[in-house]
Image 1 (tube, rainbow, N blue to C red):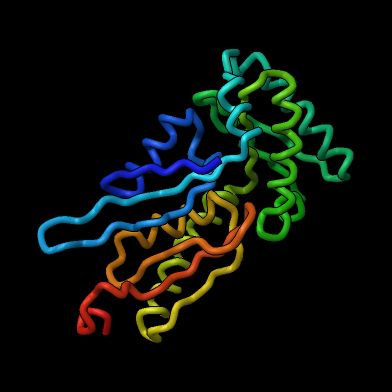
Image 2 (image 1 turned 135 degrees about the vertical axis):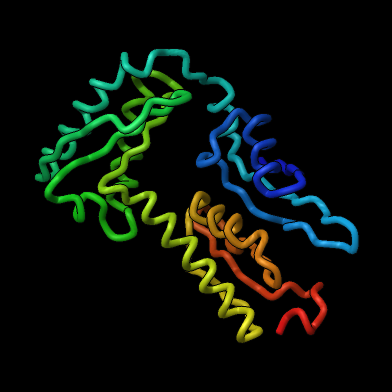
Amino acid sequence: MIREFEGKTELEAIALAMQELQLEQDELDIEIIDAGKRGLFKKSNVRIRVHLSDDEFEEDYDEEFTGDLEEYEQQIIDFLSTVLTKMGYSGDVQVNFRKNGKLGLEIISDHSSIIIGKKGKNLDALQLIVNVYAGQLQPGLKVVIDSENYRMRHEEQLVKLAYRSAEQVKRSGRSKLLDPMNPFERRLVHTALNDIEGVTTKSEGDGLFKQVRISLDDELPPLRRQ
């Protein structure tokens, strides 16, 4: 299932999608189909496309979180601690936040680098397993797992990569295709470069992991592209 939304900015379009679909931003697979162009007097609206499988769409509408986060958090903490122990890496699991049906957990361990894994793949795998368990306790409950503030550091690195790549595109005049990213990572890049004059971004590829292509804005006059 594909839905399209429009707003004055990318953030406004995403907010409209979140409101209508009743989903969190990190649950949306978003493609920027029109980043909006600056005219003489105003800028045209930003248009986004949201990709949803029929199963995901029905599940998110049928299941709402109605319970108390604290009612389930100790069971989830115990489950995650058990998984870590079975992996051979002991660690202390603490609550980071409780907000809007989301429970944030922090893993404190001497083996954090292994638990996080290359590009956060181990951390993402743990988060997936824990969310399957949490969904059995209370449909709609979402768990976010972090360690050593990895997720924030990773976001900062992606934004720096986006800015650096955009400058390379402007200097060379050639587009640049970034490595495959998940929907959340792609949105960070699109958002970071949305207001950078001289470049546009577009997601390419199929499936969950797509690549972001950064290109020169063809509608800008030549002198402004130097």
